Length: 211
Image 1 (cartoon, rainbow, N blue to C red):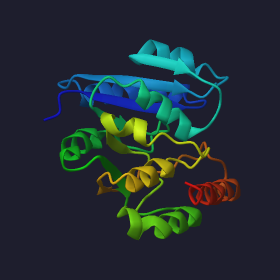
Image 2 (image 1 turned 90 degrees about the vertical axis):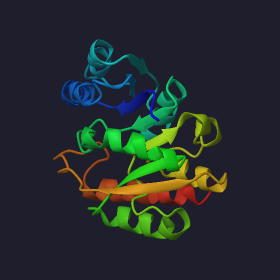
Image 3 (image 1 turned 30 degrees about the horizontal axis):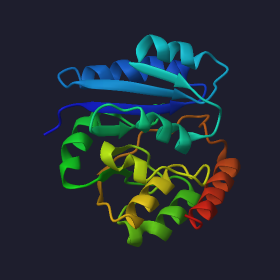
């Protein structure tokens, strides 16, 4: 039984997106005790100020990327069920209740996209699919049990969330997934254009080999 949900997101220049995302989450979870935690990655556009107005907890940290931002936010969570969600509106909040309820059968539940747009994402996920049992290792739309967070804290830099799953697998935690249709990708993704994004993802892949 879900007694409360901590929703964690990390941002860089996402003030406009937060103004849409947080009210949507509030509506979906209006009958469930919850908190929304926003970790700002030192945005220069006023993201932190918007987060302070709309979220339950808004913190700023030095810019270290998505993975460490999510880890920082998860360590601040007060509920036993933690949902991580991208702040760029590419994760539909409607799946939050399903992720929370189905976490009962696992320690981490991943909302895997049914199709991966970047070749680097497909290579990354294919490499780890059999080992981890997850089709989309780079989806950070996930549910976690709060109790496991200290055991899976990342140390290898930006791996776009893959390190959480790899460390969890090595510790023997149960990882499962649900499949969801991906939302349209925004025109200017945080990770960069096609060439930059693929290079960054492949660099992250190399880092995971050291976990």
